[in-house]
Image 1 (cartoon, rainbow, N blue to C red):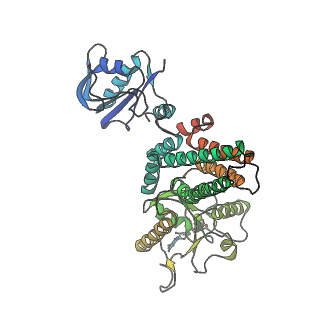
Image 2 (image 1 turned 180 degrees about the vertical axis):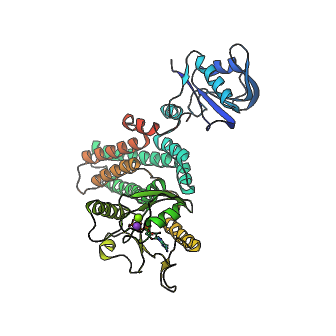
Image 3 (image 1 turned 90 degrees about the vertical axis):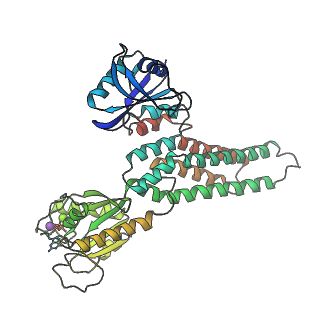
Length: 432
Ligand SMILES: Nc1nc2c(ncn2[C@@H]2O[C@H](COP(=O)(O)OP(=O)(O)OP(=O)(O)O)[C@@H](O)[C@H]2O)c(=O)[nH]1
Ligand SMILES: [K+]
Ligand SMILES: [Mg+2]
C-alpha cells in the first residue's frame, strides 16, 4: 500500500501558525486518532488535537479533503497548529509513530498530484516557480503557468494535431478512390501552418519568459578605474565588489541580483578593458566580453564620455553609455551622468534600468519560461515544418504529425516523463 506522507508545509519556526499536511490512505485514521470524527470536507473545524493516548498536543484547525478533490488527489488532512517548535516537533513525532506514515520527501506532495493527474508538468513547474518567485513579474508568470494556461494551450494543440492526422490517414486509406477530394490535404496544410504559427509566436514570447524567470542581464563594461565596482556596490546596496584606486582591481565576474520595478535583474561587474595587463587580467577581460555578448544590456561606464569603443559596439548588444564620477567633472555634459556620491544620479540610473527591463520584458505574461519547455516546443515546430515540405508522401506527413504530438506530450509530461521528473521535483521544498 502507498505510504501516507506528512510534512510541515509552512515556513520556519517559531511562527504564528504552522500548517502540517498529511496525504495518503491513512488520512482518515490520522483524523480519527487525533480529533475523532472527520470534519465536513473542506471545512475548517477547531479541535483539540490528541495523540494515541488521548493527551492533548495542541488546539487548532483541522481540515479534511477527501480524494480525489484534493491537491494530491489522495485523501489529505491539514492541521493548523500554533507555530511553536515544541508543538510542531511533538505533532510530527506523533505522526511518525503511526503505522504507514512517514515524513514526505522534497516535492513529494506535488509529485503525487502529478502522478494522479491533478497537475501536468507545466503546472508543476509553475508551482515550483511560484514558490521561488522573488519579483512581481516572476510571480505573474508563475501564477499563469500554475493555473494551467500552458496546459490548456498544449492540450488544444494536441487535439488539433490528432484531427489533422486523422484527415491525412483517412486520405491515405481512400487514396485509390476517386471521390475523396484532394483539397482535404489543402485544408490539412492550412491547419498545420496555423498550428506552427501559434507555436512559433509562443516561442518568441518565451524569450521574454525565460528572461523574466532567470533575470534580465546587465553587464557593466568600461576602462579600468571607471568606477564599475563602486557603481555595482551602490546599486546592490551591499559591499560586494572590491574597490581600490588601482586600475585592474576586478578580475573575476561578479554578479548581484536586483528587483527593478518588479523585474529580476542580474548585474554583472567585470574587469576593466584596456590593452596590456597581466594574464589574469586578460582572462578577466575575455570573460567579461563573453558574458556581455550574451547580455540584454551593456552598461558602458567611462569618465570621458567617449562611449563604448568599436569592439564593444560590435558585440551587437544594446548599450547604455554612462559618464562616471560626475562629481569630479564639470556639469552640462550630455547623456546619463552618475556619481556614487550623488544619490539622485543613482536613482535616475535605477529608473532608467527599470525602464529598459520593462520595455523588453513587459506585456502579457508568456507561457514558455524554461529551456525545457522551449526545447519541446522547438521540436514540435521543427517536425511541423518538415510535415509542410511540398510533395511529402502522406505516410511521412502522418508520421511527422505523430512526432509533433509526442513533443507536446513531453512538454506536458504525458510521455517520456521519468528523465525530467527528478530534476523538477527535487527543486521543491519539503512540504510541497
Ligand atoms: N569621486 C568619485 N570617485 C569614484 C566614483 N566611483 C568610483 N570612484 C573611485 O574610483 C576608483 C576606482 O573605482 P572602482 O570601483 O574600483 O573602479 P573599477 O572600474 O571597478 O576599476 P577596475 O576594477 O580596476 O576596472 C576608486 O578609488 C573609487 O573610490 C565616483 O562616482 N566619484
Ligand atoms: K580599481
Ligand atoms: Mg572593479
